[in-house]
Length: 344
Image 1 (cartoon, rainbow, N blue to C red):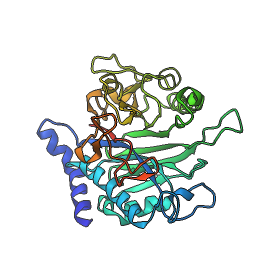
Image 2 (cartoon, rainbow, N blue to C red):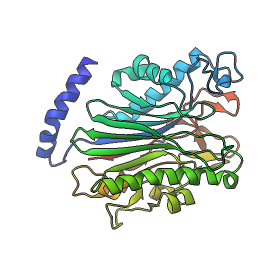
Image 3 (cartoon, one colour):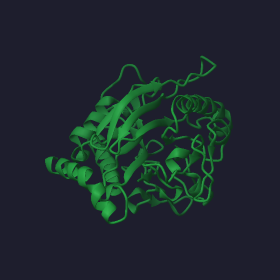
């Protein structure tokens, strides 16, 4: 750990100068978003319905499977690291602070040196979102949970949106919004109003930032349970399609996942069809090459490494290697593939 810290400090202090000498600019600042599929601890939470994921529960969850899940998450982030550990990692479907503490302190991920930000949300099952951050590359200033409230009080509660304001290692302010939209349980059409309402709340936060800040650097990521061309993304959140030839406006949102979506690529498979449910969306200022901290649409990618996939015997081809398939334990990684983007 000490060796990693020393190397990171040396690179932070000297890397920019060395890379400028090579004509390649600053070090990459990598952001990852990953729905890890039901990362539950093994402790009963009396305030949530987590009984399926307890020792002796219907799914047979236990300490061995819990530790394997942690090792799987660590392997994914190691595969994404290369020469640079991801600076920010947005996780969806995480149960608790204990699960996160065990992940960053006692699992194979401990050598990465991550800290985390997490709030308990009103989700019935107790699954939340959380942000892992590298403390030498991102410095949190403010964090809060933004509730998603439905007009009908009988609606099933959903997860809060996590908002974090922080400074990057380059002293640029970054506004991060991590969102896990309501699921499609009950059917896409029947559940669409829930995702539309969540998108309205998300857009409200974006509008507040645009009104309060000059050219804010806004990064929205998560599992939207909708595609880049669906109403919640296009009409409500107003996340525009983007390509390298798009004329960029600093006060507009752009969906970096759109180009891969129209190519038929995705992060989740349903009945043999891939869909881009997991997305990263940025404000136009983050696509401005004149900004000190920016990216391009081509830098958005899906990690589809072989170890994250398995054969799809029913629909042919490949599908994500899941932890559970229905109620049956598979021992895999997740039903989603991770997405990531590099900023420079």
